[in-house]
Image 1 (tube, chains in turn green, red):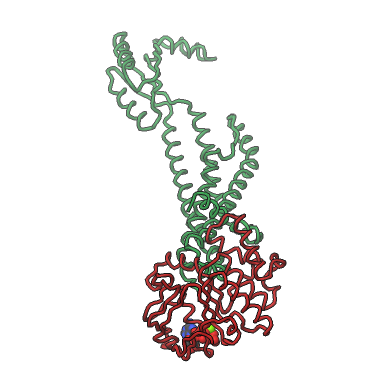
Image 2 (cartoon, each protein chain N blue to C red; image 1 turned 120 degrees about the horizontal axis):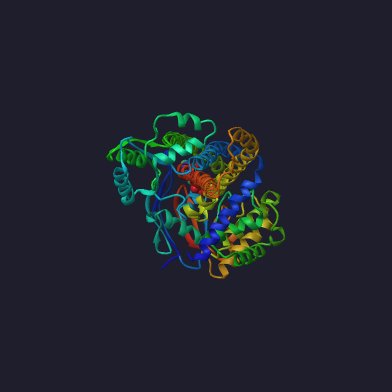
Length: 304
Length: 224
Ligand SMILES: Nc1ncnc2c1ncn2[C@@H]1O[C@H](COP(=O)(O)OP(=O)(O)OP(=O)(O)O)[C@@H](O)[C@H]1O
Ligand SMILES: [Mg+2]
């Protein structure tokens, strides 16, 4: 078979499937809605997750570690730590905050100047503020442990401990979305399986006659595959539109809520990559359902 | 090499009816053969073994040198694409137009659309249905449906044409037209096998007779 021939056969099968789908608008609409609504759930979850992730990144910026030295640490001790930080591969940037600076900064705070002046001695230790290279909670935790073991270090504080909790939360969210997608995906394959079974029944005569006239198995199956895939495509588009509509409906309330917490945040619709994945996933599920159904039901039809 | 050879063929249906027993005959290329016999004699069964719709329980059916019983699924499909078959119940698709019914074998064979459309119109013209190409089979008379079935069978220009009672339920003038049509296909070199209870219809064309009686071959001779 030449390439042109192959393309033509596929074009024909796709066209035939499209005509069948267009020829039964009510059924098509109902199936597309079932597929669409089911897929809109995980897709909507994914959209929220993507937004949440963006919010989290905005807020936390880059995490920092503060290293507080003991009060009796001297210049030489700080130089030692300075040297170590300078050599450290996982340190992007760091800043030395001498105890005098900490004291004078706090003094500038309204109302605290007198309190601080009244103290017998400077209560602040020398400190380093470190911006690490990695951002994963494990890396930060390891760095924290390492810095705590440096000489004359009293305490290391991970500024964004909540990054870890957030990360765990996001991971949980991702798991839920994935689980939902798998579960509903199976349901959708089952729905397509049944739709195609009915299609095969209504096209029984056509299948039988095609067999009699020498159609190959591939020729007979092809339109059903396209039917399943096209139905999936329509369902995917419905899901995408639903999620888009939800994003627009939620945009205003969400940004109002965010402004209450003095965040500047706007809910964004599903990004392009996720949108494409959603549609491709829907097409794949439709094709899979069709494939299973055709493998199961088409062999039963033998010409009489 | 003959176009078709039956070699001690028997067909027993599940349930024990032996529809065809010990049948042997040969059809040469370009020959026209009329297969007759009473209702239930086994004509359809015999013809249906040629495109491997039924498989012989004994013996061999050889089409163009190929043992049909040994063909795999894909081999059977290729065999059927190269035969023209008119089924006793016509097997038309009632949700497709006349044109699309005739187009089906060409679509299966993968013809380019323009060439296919040209061939479909040529076949419809041959059977006198060109004006009805947009009609649906339900709107055709019995005789027209029969001609539609013929057009579909010849559209891919098979070298072997098989017809199972193509003149059944048609008035005599119409039946005569159809017999004439097979004669003209045979005239351009197509091997033709027609099953009919009305062998007199084909007698003027000098076809060879094969007569079945209760599944057995009783006569095999040239029409005088
Ligand atoms: N699918 C089948 N299963 C069981 N028995 C069958 C089947 N098809 C045909 N038969 C039997 O086989 C015998 C031959 O039938 P066949 O249809 O070949 O006869 P025929 O010569 O074509 O008859 P007619 O002229 O009525 O079409 C009959 O007894 C019939 O009942
Ligand atoms: Mg019969």
